[in-house]
Image (cartoon, rainbow, N blue to C red; front, side, top):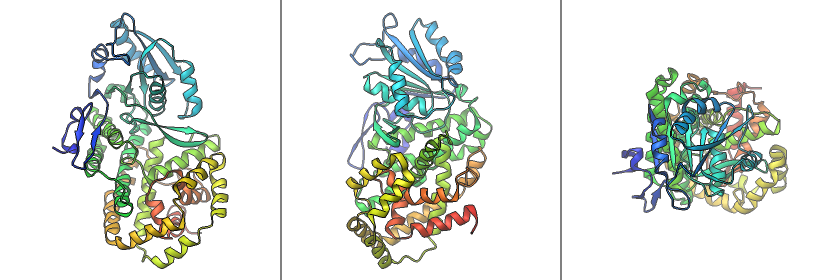
Length: 463
């Protein structure tokens, strides 16, 4: 039986010998999603093995609960009464910030408030709370649970934490949650924008899988078909539930949460975010960084991913209209000017530029020899690449209307991004990661600037 045919509980806390030749594992012990799921918290907790091998003892062990100003009332209504009724000792730290990102400062704030006698950490929230708790729990050698309060992002089951480190969005190794609880009763009151953000994060997987498979053909990168099928099946299930999401139907919220968890599990199976993140995430991360540079909170991560998926889909649509000139692409590759490139990176990445430049020195993504090798492979596999792009464009053709039904953003102009800034994002977001994606493909073929201008004309009007 393939991964996509299995239920979530059949995919966790066990090794799966895959047809790809690798053994996959998501080291999560319990995933409970659905109405009444929160009622399983205490029974699971009372059987939890701790870091030292003991089973959790309510007479002596202490839980550390992490919330923020938005999720604290949910914890008080649904979580803390269960702990008190079971006589489980717990302390709480609630981040007092109205809005916050996953930053170095947030990590240090949580560490400073983590009691030394903590046996287990329970995060009650979604994106930022989850990423900070996972990272801190990992470095404190503590098991942690996540109780979702919004189906807004795909990191619930992930074993990595994306943190803004030295002003650059960086993915760090961490640990999977031992238990994930997703109860629609806790999520029904979240803002519609957060549900739309979850949909945006999920729809972006179409681009991630497309780019991954192209990289397998062009670069010989490892790619697991079963993980790809698992992710695509979860996306379809989520997309099909959009009418219910607009009504906050409990089952639709359950399906979205399950899709988000499966996406995170795919990350754990592979050991990197490759099955869930590509050019659409590069654009989203760059937008988030630029907001921070301006001293603004910006949009939710999933909102930006949904918007970026619309943009990448449009880029790919325009790509299909091109007659590719491989000799021109080779001339473009040879003309790479590292001095100009570094100046542009410093202009757009500002205080994060040194990290981006360091990455290029190691990865050499734009090195003419590497680009020329990839151009040869792209030319030899043009039919395959075009077929993949056609499939991606078809899969994402309804993205904008789906997102708009849940208050999602579908245009950078509407999102308040200036044309000049959006052009810089389109040209330089690929420098964020050493990952072969749509933006790098367009660069390699010497058409990134042309495609960027076409897409900018589409969103902002011709000037």
